[in-house]
Image 1: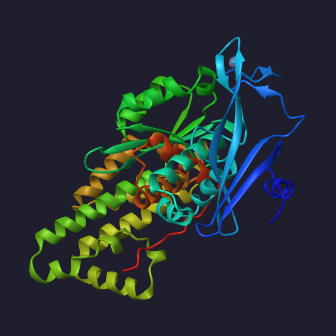
Image 2: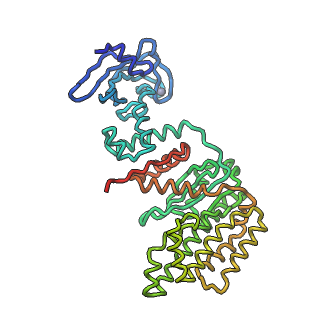
Image 3: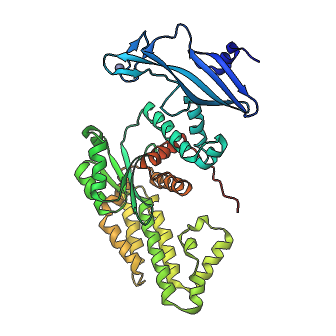
Length: 412
Ligand SMILES: [Zn+2]
């Protein structure tokens, strides 16, 4: 059996030594009792940080620490209270104990790191904890990380809304386009929603630092931006405009489905995903399926071509050329009687300045889409994100570490 000294060397809690230990081989547990080493007697008030030589009284806390081989480890630690003239009788600050929860800091770090690549349910099973405990540990881990890092400046901002369900319909998401990191979530998608971000989260100096904003052609957001960031350029980006094009083609598909009976229904049915896909991303077999559909329905074919060609608008870098291309695209709509696309064209013309702004201010394409995708993936995977703060920290951590999610599928 190792001595307490050897246990101290293996435990490696800086400033602490093991003075008692117990191993239960049947229940696979290791218990260690630790206290401060001699010469480590400067106590710090957890309220104000004032230093003390004398303790007011002592207490023992038990926390779970990293396992030793197959043994679950509990550390009993002596903690002191100090009599602080500022805060009264207060517990000392112990860096190894980050919260009131019964876990050591490095145990919480291990759980938090595990949560970066696996669902809370799996981490819970691995550590033998309740799922809700794992999420609480993960949240504290992320809060500590957020508090310790520098926030990059916000010069280009993205605003998007995510549809999250029937009851609580929309979530407004503000992100930093340069770092690809979500910054803030707001419930709903009103003007007041975005107003709250500018009012509560940014100083006037920070607001002035924002040069460009990528946003959907959504009136309430535009009104908020014009009020709070009068100097910034609004850019209606490709992602949002192509979302509207996808809505248009879906509307054409549905109209054709109901307009034509019999055979046509069978051909259009189940083709939604295909019609929303880009041609370049389809396999030969899928292209053939689409071609069969196009041969039978000219209108769906035309709509698909219109959607595909609109995408090319963002290959232009000069506003004159971009405008020309858009004009030619709109000309193709004549005599087509594709109502949803005519509505789209009208919308594009009404927001022309913000579309051409893409040529005037270079903003990275695809960032809003990627942020959006990460958040949706989180929402699909996990429960526990009713807590928006947790969802935000989680999404920020993904952006900062570029963690790819390991997708676990339930066995069928
Ligand atoms: Zn104090």
